[in-house]
Structure formats: C-alpha cells, structure tokens
Image (tube, rainbow, N blue to C red):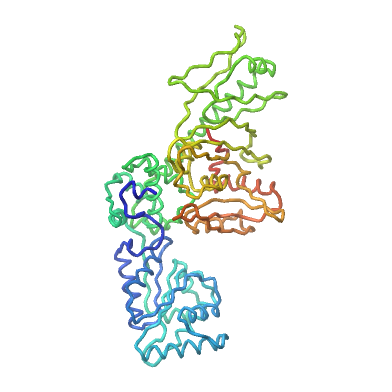
Length: 560
C-alpha cells in the first residue's frame, strides 16, 4: 500500500524469505559456503543453527538458487512427521514410485535410485528446516540414511537447519551415533549494531529507497529493540512505514518508532538471551522501561481523576441529578467516559452537538436557580477522518482488577470515513491505540471489508467496543473459544503455548487473508464450557498483559 507513496518497487521489509533481500554477514556467508561445499563434495551431514528470525530459511532459498544443475534437492519444512512419512515425502519429491511402502522397502527403493544417480555423477540432497522439531525416533533413524553409501562417497547429502535447541538435542547421549556422522556445524549469530544499520540500508536500497527516510535516532531505537534479529527489524520498520504513510509523512523519527514498538510488544519473536547479546550489542537502552514508567504515571493520574469525579457525583442526590438533567442540554463528548450508575436513575443518552471553532458551553434550556450548582462540562473537538454516524447507548460496568469479569461490555459505533484511509489509522483515531488484534476485531465486525489498507471516502465502518466479550466466540457444540491475538506471523503462537495459564488448552493458529497480498494469523485458545469460564480466563490473561486488544488491566477501548 505505501510502496507507491515512497516510490518503492515493492515492500522492503516483508517477512517472506526472499533471496534477493539476503544481507550476507560473515556468518551467513560461512553457513552458505559450508552447505554448498558439503553437498557438492558429498560429505553427508551438515548442521546450521541460529536464533529465531536470523534468516535461516532465507539462506535455504538462496542455496536452492545457487545450487548446481546436477544437484537435485528435497526441501522438508514440515517436521512433525514420522520417519516412514519422511521417506515417502523424499521419494514423492523425487518422483520415484514405491511399490513396497514398508520402511525396508522404501529404503531399498531409495538406495537403488541413489546408486543410479551416482553413476551419472548426480547428487541428491535433503534439506530439513526447523529440524529441532523432529522427534527423537526420527533423528535416530536419520542415521540409517547416512548408511546409504559406497566405499568412496555418501549417496545422500542431508542438511539440518534449526534453532539452537537442535544443538542441545544432538548433544544428548542417545543421539551420539548421529552426532558422530555430522561433518560440519555452523551457527548464524544475531547482527551487531553496525550490521543492523547496514541491513536496513540494504533492504531499502533493493527496492529503490534510501536510509535517509529514517532519522539516526529512529534507526538507533530500532537496532536497540531488535537485538540483532532481522525479523524483528523487519516488523518494526514495516509498521513504522505504514504508520508514517497514514500520517502523510516522509520522514520516520524516533517518536514513530517508539509508538510502533509499543504496539508490537505482543508479537515480536523472542530476542537473543541477554548474556549472548551483550558482547555484541553492549547494553541495550531502556526505551521500553521508560515508556512503561510514563504509562504507569499517566494511568495513576487517570485513576485519581476518576475517583475524584465519582466522589463529586455521588455527593449529589438522585433528585438533583434528575432536575438538572431536565434543565440542561449537554454536548456529546468526543470519547465515551465511564460514569457510575446512580441508584434509581439513569442518565439519558447525550445527543451529538456541532462543535464550534472555539469551545462554547451550550445554553441551558431553562434558567437555573442560583442555589443549584451546575455540573462541570467539557467539550472536546471531534477528530477527522471519521465522524460518528449516530450516538449509541452503552452500558458501563466497573470491574476491579483482581476480580473475575462478570458482565461483558458490548456496543458498536458506526462511522463514515471522511477521506481514503486504512483500518490502522482509523483504529488509532478512534481508540487512541492500534495493533493487528484491534484491526482484526474491526474486520470481524465488517465482513464486507476485503482490504484493510483501502477504506474509501464515505464508506461506513462499524467500530466495535474492544471488550472482553468481543474476544469470545461461541461454537456450534455450545463450546467457546478466546481470541488471544492476531499476528503477522504464526510464530507468535509459541508464546501462548508456553503460557502456564493455557497449559490445558488447545492453541489454534488460523490463517486469515486481510488484503490481496497479506495473510495474518489468528491465535485462539479453546475450548471452554461457558462464557463465564472465558471471562475468568480473559481476566487472568489480562493481568499478565497477554491480550493485545485489551492491553493492561483496567484498560477498555470503547472509542471516543
């Protein structure tokens, strides 16, 4: 969407493993050279490891582009399989019929094929990505494939690519025979601070842009936050460009990057352990800590203001409020506020009133008696690009932070878009906060929207209240699931699979097309027997700040 605006040939910070964006550090060059040499020289096993998001899969696709024509490759990326399924996959990718599908029969068929290819000086290589997820039985049986050899060379070349956990597994005593057959091992390290800067410049240069569009402070903040992980750099830079585009700016500064980092806290892959990162990055600036401190101070002031307002409201009798409600026409505030219900009375729905250039109090419908004090009134300007179509009655329930949520909040606001826009900027305007999960809830309320980046002028959009109840979905079998979040990569689900609060729940990752070129991933937890069970679990997750839509405890996004 923003590519035309910045003059890019394509998006520079996509998370897809495109070889043309490969930024070769010394570690990447060493790993690529080792894989090429190990395959072409028939060395058998080669192992390459690296942290999540360091570019291992991109390196594999680069290898596939550089490999010689006489080398045939089988790329295995789904590793939750048995050894028998692995053999069938290899034979299928090589277009080899297998009349006998037993393990012995498949090995015999593969061995005959490899001997035939050796006579023609052809090489067969199997590349397994995410190899750390292979079961112990499969890894032990891989040793059998290394036995396919002649007295001079290995018939099958195997490259195992995975996370550092793969190294730990290979060190186990029961895999020592496999470990002894590994000819070469390489590990891809996270980028240094200087490499991170050059990485950003490299990707912008590939698409026809320049690093000058990021200020020096912005790049420094990105590098410090990402910790040398290319995928994290991509996530921050891509969202910073989108945010800057929505504000019609050309320059990305540190303030924009700070806001993006805050919104991405829930979906950035796990960073490198601090003890491994310090020798390369020194100390990481405490930007997120400062932001958290400011947020807590602001939240504390807001709580004090709310308590003061509640005390002033309770001091008035119901009869006084009823009389004054009949006498005074109140202007509609730009943002809904939480006002406690008064026993026996309910405030009438406030109607929207046009806002003058300078805030002016609405004239009272009738004269007010001198001895009757008028309540404080506030008029806030209504922001563009969205204007409220109509006022919607809302029910507000005060929920203590440490208690279970007992009653959901549910209401929708229909807005008419005043200029071409995106759902990210629309959410930012309406909720004062924007992330992928909030946009997912908007898409859920507007099934007719097929591209979150193209919202046309005069288009009507339903903006739901972001409440605990909005995260609950009912199934056809009277069961319920919770929407934990929506993310740009399926890796975010790993955080919830490790969460103790969800250890007895199934974590589902559901792909969702949000635009013609983008697919997001909904992460859901289930199943629950009742809506009340869901609300209690949501309350527990929110206490640990694990729900991007709701944010910190006591935070409710209900629009302005």
